[in-house]
Image (cartoon, rainbow, N blue to C red; front, side):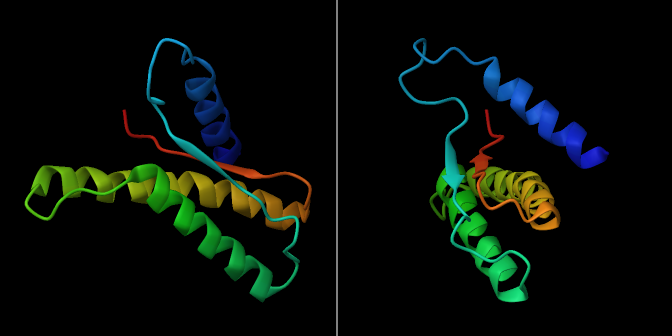
Length: 109
């Protein structure tokens, strides 16, 4: 139930952002496809996890080594974004529904 609430909150936040008003997306996102994976196997689940991690790194970006605050923000973004994306992946694995992509969106503002 908590996973569904997190997903609903994420959808509500991303749906409320006007697209034309900003030059860069407020919450960058990447769709993670998994149709080609057999999520019923451990190998398929691990491959999906690797794809999600790459998407998380992409949407959260990076910070230079001298920017401690920026590094902490990136670390927090990656932790929280991965947690949300992993909840979506868990739902996909449980349902083994291979026709829906997982949307990974940064929670950084």
